[in-house]
Length: 538
Image 1: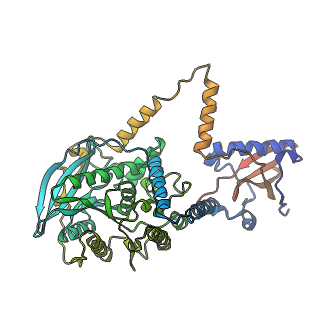
Image 2: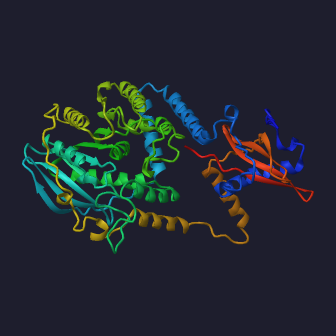
Image 3: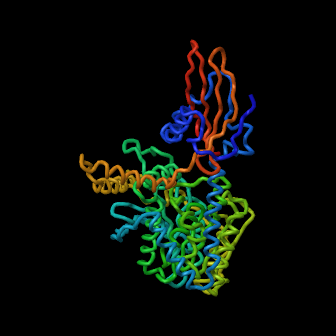
């Protein structure tokens, strides 16, 4: 039998079959509960109904339906934000936007803690011909240890500009050969560079077996996602912990006699580019910023299927109109260099779009020369062209000259030479706290303030929970009629009867597939409604 289409959107109450109407209504309510648990319950036992196959033109392609919906939503929110900012013309307009961005970022990541003593420990030193590498440990929070290397020039007249270098996702953190090279090149050009292990990398594994000393989770992205997903439950973001490590790193730089506290730079690549962008957004002490291999647009990132750690995803970011470029706008009109790779997995077309937005902001401030883009025809990484241009840019704005930025032969140290802890891991050498422990303490403090449920207030509490869940899940405030389409039928084997394929629309562009079977056993007809698995995102 050919498929029968119902083109119009019709309220369920106008359907002819009350039982069928009730079952479809129940299906709409139950979908969120059944979810993927209905897998394997969703096909006729014989015959075949590929519920949405053949109807892609009218319903959309099932495997990418959710993805397409999210792309459209992201494009809509991006367009709305651009339209709003198109009216901005003056520095005052942009200063208001800068305040808005800073406020929303604090809201999305959670409040920063109070500053506490850094308790800096100097645990060793590596001496090189024109600079030295100090091995240090500081506490960004009480008992939250940050292992770091400080590259200090031994020629030239201090105080020098100070550079904070957040690392990308290298398993050995600060000891990665590329990041060592960046720090050494800066020291050779008269900068004091502080490079530190991100949490979950290098000497700061968050998940270490105390008996074997081995990592329970893979270093890097796996540990970030594990800790970050737990942060979402407490209304915070792993970025808050990571940003604060960097902010306290700037505190440390400014405390050093070798550093000019008014000339602070942040630069990093990949995940370090992410942190460079974040720290630049929230810390006004940054004079020059150079994020590498990160800046694009969220729309371009979604379209390209680029995944990201928990700290790289701010809940409500696009809904608030905040994209990569907006995170850098609070820095204007101070010098900003975006370093990019044309063949990066962070989409380069998005980099160009963001650079165009920032050019307009700097022009409105009257300093178009203070924002620039350096690009190399290579792949992701803090490659030599980007390293050299980063040093040249910093020298131009903080030293009044470009300097000898050409990179020569630089000695890379073995990991062990830069190690700050006896065992190579904070957890097995010093102990201390972790994001998991701090997040658990926060969760317990939040739970302590939950309202007590008694017989007299249970309905009130239920109403409040429902209201907050609706807001948290961004559920629509009104219920629209359900649009149902009948897609086709297939005969079941023997005397089982036939199964009918249906689809119903949950929201614009999203169709849920299902089938129901009309069975005929022993001359008795029964109905069973079978949910298809939810559409997967590719």
